[in-house]
Image (cartoon, rainbow, N blue to C red; front, side, top):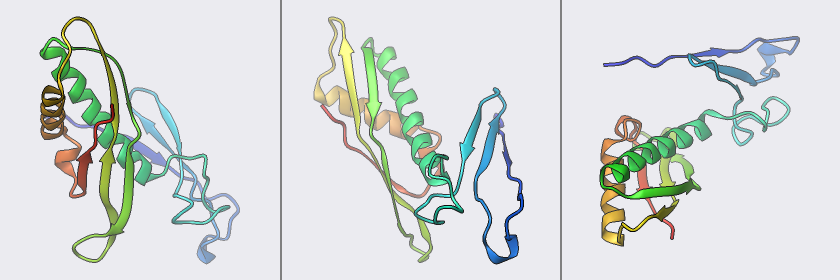
Length: 154
């Protein structure tokens, strides 16, 4: 079993906190040294109290799901002897109401486009099986209640 940590840091500044007039911009620091500028989504908190340049938690969740799926796909493809040249996913998460009536990321669609090279090329059945297996193995997908769909792109 492993642990994964992040430091989330926010500082008020001179805003009118008690009136809700404060910046939601903050930073995420990860153990490997990466720092990410983050903020509430402008679709949740209007500008100037959010920063559209920052990664919002909803985007981060979608990216984490897509990244985890990709990493498993690459590993499984390599195990099968397929050579992946590139992988690009235009992943989208949709906000809605969950079963309890609370706002949540209720649906995530992964739309990976994958280019293979080499003599051994997977057919559509093998690609579908790789996606199914990657989804089954993905730690993040196994951790969320949102519906996750994979719509592989040619």
